[in-house]
Image (cartoon, rainbow, N blue to C red; front, side, top):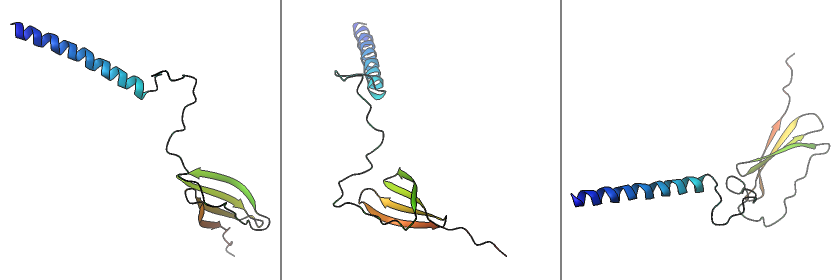
Length: 115
């Protein structure tokens, strides 16, 4: 009977300790302040950094005459620059941010009307 009581006490203490471990894990996972961290510190940006290494040289891109940059979008390690050309058509320039190289060009031209 003494062994059974000891086993029950041991399992009860084990349950309490494991609940403490689970509570600690939840606090750490969901951003609790631990180990003297400053609560006012800004959060780190989500996801991996876009640029993995520094480029060896500056990137220079010649725009066609009369073109203007309408917008840029950065996602998935790539940057897409939308140009509006002088004739009203659009051109998309795609750059790889890791290497700094231009990966491609997409030209969008209005379709000729059927006569």
